[in-house]
Length: 458
Image (tube, rainbow, N blue to C red; front, side, top):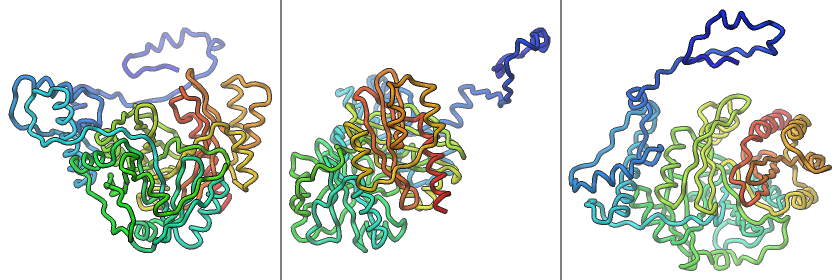
């Protein structure tokens, strides 16, 4: 292969190579990008916090001079020109408020004309996942949950909602025909309509979210129901905040009469959840999470699907209590893009459930009738060419459709369900504590297998 974007190859140099010394030829062309600073500046600016430049440090230096003047945004970005003006305006507001709050905390003596707001709140994990579903779709979802080892732990005392539980994982199936769940089902069918986030201080998280421009999400509580603070994220997604300090984490006993879960299939907690969004909304979600909570973002990576490209970025809290993978899809030919189109913009596509022993869990799931996503023989052939395995391990993985990844810090096992409800799915993972990835190398194989399964279903 010859990389010739920035230099000219002398044809005589090529002709001097004997033909029998050339093993193979790979040929490609590419545009010669002239990415000077002006071009970069005119087309790729982001809101502070969406990019990677030291905006906060720059503003700290400005404010340290005694500056008391106005501060505004100057954004040139081709993507923003075609995006939602309301969301872009909200992102701009959120970014500048969060940046100047960071400046005030870094330089307490600097003049910053902002009312006080709480600091970023530590996000500790997912408290619950709530599905909106009705009728036959709700029954199919309950069969899926049962095959994953979940058990009914209680019914809401005044609403058509059932709590399913295993380990620390709580999943609510809400069959209300009105309110947020009813509206979500009418628009999208079975979908995740609400996520509860475990935080260090629910009141502070709510106050900060509102100060940064999030709208409150208010519902009419039933008799004796507790009120969990809730805000709307990008695209009006509903997020509730749950903490232990105020007793909000005891809502399950009070409203559902929840019982302690049984042994289940070895699922312990939610490892991460995936949000599939348009590329425009991806920047909005990154900014929402990193400005509201004490979370960090990873570099963006490209995930290659058989029918296109998906951009992926992770936001997580220090220590990994809450991990969210954001997938930005622009083409409806990709699996992620088709999911967005068919569900009219719903966000959460899959939930990853953690186990300490994926082989024991896989056996328990199979006994419950769980249908794992079938992986082809060539996937395991590829694995054996990339990694050294103990005798028999690959055969055990293949028998249960288990995928594998490894880096210098540890190993990662994955097991996928079949898709349901227009493209949603569950994942079961076993993660070495030092492994920080999400099995990105397995994504093309998993996506191809999911597409094959969908074609087989017709």
